Length: 331
Image (tube, rainbow, N blue to C red):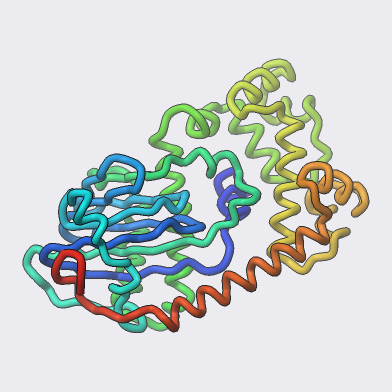
């Protein structure tokens, strides 16, 4: 594993959802704050994204926007005034049918992919926490080639209902999330883009994340990074915000929490995977770090997952249906 893969895996829960939507005329729809991440991909036309707390964002054909912290927002045909935004209809009222469809061609229409990822923010990697409220990835020639390919594939799968789509679509949505975050890390400056752009710190992180259970020491990690122990400690601490061994301890326990949440593995097996010699050693360190025992954490995570599944099922049953957006503020 690498830093981005681990950071995403630690917070991803459940299955992502998406809809392919075609809108026309004057329209305005609200997406409430969400305990996860949302995204929009503009396949045709242009529109505006109006965050609850932030400047409006103009979106054109091929643009991708990620809202990694579930920020509430409005999407509209124009930068609407406050009164119009206040009257915006819930996005759920516009959900169409029972799956992807191919809407008719309409002059001036806007076609989008809109979706959500469920996230567990209780053990968030700082890379994910540092993402801005709105990550706008404009469509530029030669930029984000992998992201563009994933968007094309996802649009095709949602539009054709091909065999295997039930597996392909969630997998492509997960791939889309990785590519959106990767594009931000490559194109950003400061913070974690700077961490991953520094060859010494990046090499050390790659070594730690690729073999979490190894008996790491500062000397051994410095050899992996190709620098002295002092140089590694100075650069790693300055960029990451904590010394290498402190980061390793924190990530081992965070990854243990992910395994407790997502697998039925016994504590002894989890301890071995994250570099602890005994279940007792892991339990002691886990309780000291998180203020709860591994068993209590697993039970709590299971209860939260069951509640989220019930809410998702209710939402699927109760959501009103609509196939075409027509005028601002209503179907």
